[in-house]
Length: 397
Image 1 (cartoon, one colour):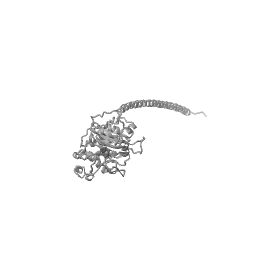
Image 2 (image 1 turned 90 degrees about the horizontal axis):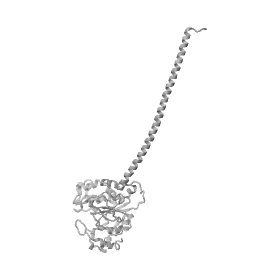
Image 3 (image 1 turned 90 degrees about the vertical axis):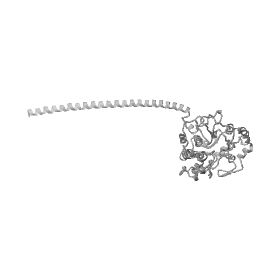
Image 4 (image 1 turned 120 degrees about the vertical axis):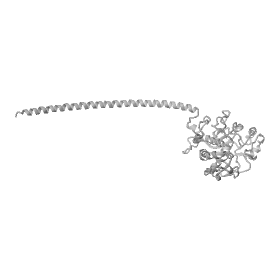
């Protein structure tokens, strides 16, 4: 049956639409391909660009780090030559080369107050005795002390607090060589004397091998040989700090009521300046700020902090750790504010023997002993020669 004109026109329109759809589909696919291609190319470029940048950054950072590290090492090496850079070994055992630090007293006391929480030490620790000399300058009895220390270098440390302008001129073989600590001027009867004592303690505490700490002056002498002194101090369960209640005007009479309510009159104590203490007690002393500040403000002449601060502080908080006596003999028989000075004419074998054993007994680790004094003062420069003559026969060194 022949198609009509209308059917022919409808067919042509249908074919035209089909071709249009095909063309549009091709265009869509083509455009989509272009977009995908562009996106893929951009992603690849970004990826490789980022990788290149990352590699460049990594190389630059590594190079910069190496340069920075090398620079820091060089700077640290320079500083270490001046003793301001500390290795672990130098941190644990400050030597003669780094006693001259740049710390203020506040920084020094903070560092010295550090206590390790971990048991034991990262090195084979041999406990030492720190001999702390508080002097006004020269050491006239130096040869006697050098003889005393000879051959026992592993068991002691020396610390010297002298006027800042004074330089001790000794040979490099002397145990006193390079042992001066950063110091300040000291005036007798003032708090600067107690400051110097705490400064000595803090410097000695920097060496973790130091276990016992004894305060001495340029006029002190040992009355026993080193092995005896070392065994006596290291073996003691207590510190040797004299602390007693003096009801006179020279004791309680120096108390200032402005110290209330922190320090009460019944807690007030007096004692010898020449102490010896174990490490834990030394840390307690240099860590205190509250009570020492009260002494600095209110214990002024005729109150003398060096006679009252440590005895009072230990009596208040750590009395059970002290034997409550001094191991340094002092002659107060002449009366007055200063002990007797013994010159060369006074030095005899019987005199030294009387100091070593005067017939009295004292407590040592809960037992009685006749060995009560290890050191003695005050001895004049003229006493040196007769003391050297007696050292081998009487004092056994």
